[in-house]
Amino acid sequence: MKINKIINNNVISVIQNNRERVVMGKGIGFQKQEGDIVEESKIEKIFNLSNEEISERFKTLLIEVPIEVVQAVEKIIEVAKVKYHKDLSDTIYVALTDHINFAIERQQEGMAIKNGLLWEIKKFYPSEYEIGMRALDWIYEIVGVTLPVDEAAFIAIHLLNAEHNNFADFNQVTEMVQNILSLVKYHFRLDFDEESLTYFRFVTHLKFLAQRIISEHPLDTSEVELYDIVKEKYKDAFKCVKKIENFLLKKYQYDMTHDEALYLTIHIQRLISRNESVDN
Image (cartoon, rainbow, N blue to C red):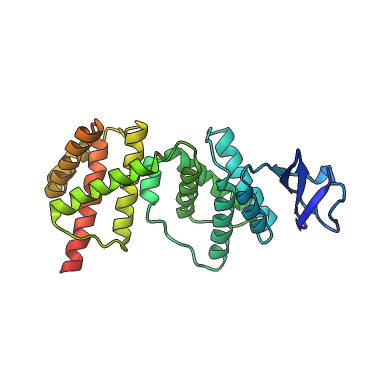
């Protein structure tokens, strides 16, 4: 196996079976030239990225990203695939490497970012969130940087975005979300502040709901007591949810669970409460 390109001291590319592969290893490219034989003892990982565009973007990214960060990312992806049986697209290598490298830089500069979707991710996507939490340990062990818990949710989002067959058909999801937004808007006769975090969280919640509906994976954790409390406390928001329930049943033959109605009511209440505070 010969070196095709030297990306940096720790990353090279080779040609195998008429396809370019990215090869990573400590010092594998140090004082080497194109055409030199690869020192196989230094190979730590061979990336077989099927998409040429993604491969090029990944190689560009690797020029600046420390090898320790790449090692941490590879650990996360490997565990997600092998132990959690996640079918991830190659885009995860670029997206997650870029994100974690930037998150580490921000943390070192004291500029950590809060994740407004932490609660939603933890509640609705526990396996991805669990991987994210374990990832924080691996990043500390390999890179030596402690990232905040918010980053576990960011990592989970990247896994969700890259997971094959996880995000249901885009057009179906978009149509469902837009229909529900119209129902809420008409019910309360309000205009959304589409730049607000509350709106962003609400739309994200609706996307997750739409994905569960289309993939037929309803949420049901039996929060009966909380459901009754929210139903009485936020009566107007709950009335709106009942309209959404009827719409979903009629159009998609989907019977919303109590838990889904509960969390949707809470999100709608947040949305209208923020709108009322802005108006006042």
